[in-house]
Image (cartoon, rainbow, N blue to C red; front, side, top):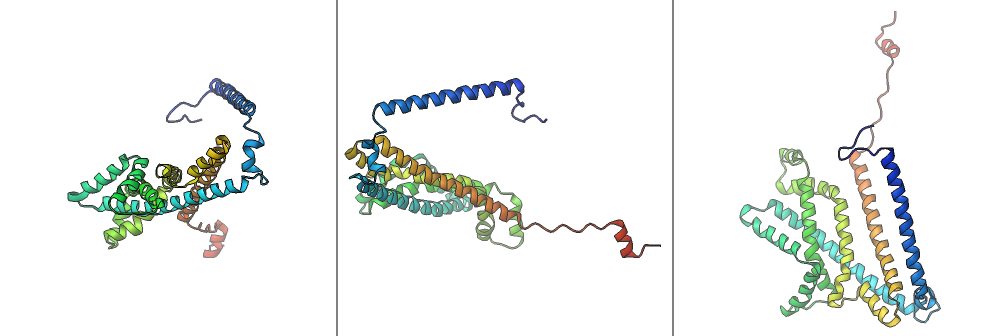
Amino acid sequence: MTNSVLYEAPGPRAKRRARYTSIVVGVALLGIAAWAVAQLAAAGQFTMNKWGPLVDPSHEYFAALWNILGQGLVNTLQAAALSIALSLVIGTAMALTRITSAPWYRWAVVGVIELLRGIPVVIAIFFAARVLPELGIELPLLWYLVIGLTAYNSVIIAEIVRAGILSLPRGQSEAAYALGMRRSQVLLTVLLPQAFRTMLPALISQLVVVLKDTSLGYVISYPELVQEAEIAIQNLNNPIQIYFVVAVVFIAINYSLSRLAVFTERRLSRGRQGPSRPARPHRTPAATGNATGGGH
């Protein structure tokens, strides 16, 4: 048995303590969950009066509520899709610009990236919605939200892509230069595809963040899912139930994105390995001797 580099392998007594501690913590969490459910039940949070608009098709508000939530989900996905696409394109361009920039203007590129990284997303959204109209740029609320999300997330993606490129072995670029490739060809056809494969989990995680940050559209009254849920709560007075459904929707979408990242990473890894080469047949000494005429 080999010991770990970071810590020693636990012995029988430590394993027993960990097992007992896990059981005690699990029982305590189950007890807290049971107590919370009992309190919610005592407060009438499981009655059809609260859940009816969400689960009972015959309820008078069922169709209207799901129409509002559905439209909010469509608005959320639309803002997220545009922000993700623009963030990927602009972030990749910023990463390549920072890598290839000359020293005399690199400070400006780095300054823009660090400035946008330090601004909270909600400030970027509010700035886009309040300052751009003052400059005579009138846009729908959707685009103010997209501009704010893109301004922040594009620089994060730029740093992710730059880290992926710098993590590649120097031999990759040296071999490409030895073949006569230009610097732009080396970046676009050799380094960038490998960087995307390497940083794919981090990129997908950032895309999940973009989707969740669409809920910050409330600062400009953009009708995304959470904003529409708040309007419904003001009329139906069932915040726990509606927010529970909204949370389930976000969890389902984000979990699907995470599984997509795992699936894509496995497919890319399988593609890098390439098809397995067939094993060469093993020749016995007798067969070798017959082939060479060595028999007496």
